[in-house]
Image (tube, rainbow, N blue to C red):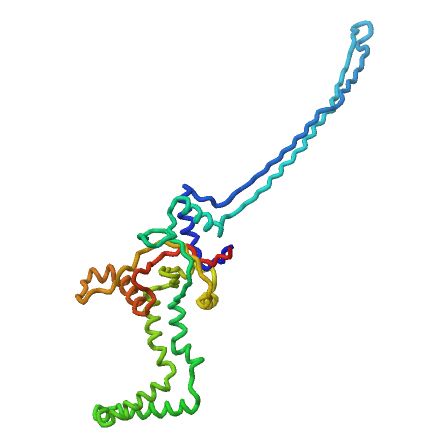
Length: 310
């Protein structure tokens, strides 16, 4: 049994349809039964009268009258019973796809000679990177709810800020009191509980621009670029899953191998190169600088991510 974390049903159905020359959406079993009984029956009754008619001594004759009544009935009994059973593939589609990929030798379980477009399946420890959530969580207006100063420290900070403002108003004052200004800045920085979050905010702001509506999941050497809308669990559960010791299973398609950094050489790049490769280059640089991606890792388009309970 599988505990699905991420499932791209559109992609699964697309590959199944191509491999099987059509996609089975449901199985229908119909049973029809009809019984017909018909009976014809009845009685035939004839009434007859006869007598003499005419004018005496002028015209004489015989008259006869006959009437027939038929009693007929027809009985029909009909029964029509149809049973309909529908079985949708749904989540079982992934098992079908895995089987089809193995039967057609399309699934790579060894990673020494992977090429772009290969189907890979792996099970490994993992990390999750949600830049939108990180950005929101380290913004100052949100952090101030849990990071705050005591009344005494807040009073000292307010006095230091006022003094720093007075000593920095003119160039002459800044030169005359440069040592005091340096001390005040260090003191204010030591009391600013938010200052340590500044770099995290800068990183997450830019990363959320490069990876909109996206959550990254790194399993071993594979960096999966996941569509946030295709996760089967909510964000809080996904957040705590990053602390589990379980290995996760990943089925995906290799985008490309990162055999070298995408960072440009010392020579300036021309406009055409920036336009065509700029977003990919910036994305790779920011992930590399924070040690989220390494040389010889792979970028992957995920099809399914799950825990296997079998």
